[in-house]
Length: 61
Image (cartoon, rainbow, N blue to C red; front, side, top):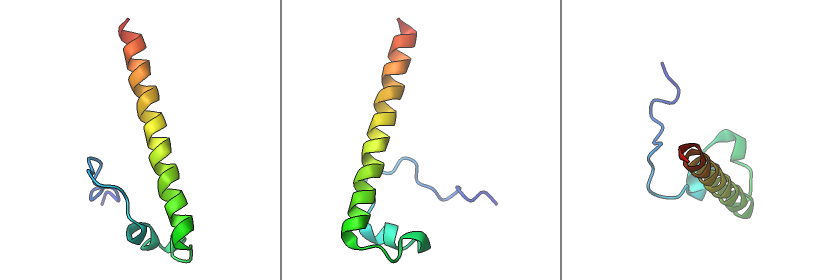
């Protein structure tokens, strides 16, 4: 069974504190710590997207 089969890669809404806290590795963290994690994930995703976008534009020129 593929452990990623239920992963919503086209997700339209932000990750919530409850979703993160629901994972055993993050269950004991405070809400502020989880919010920091969410912000970090969001920033890293934006950086990866823009790098990929710029890379593909440069390859086309």
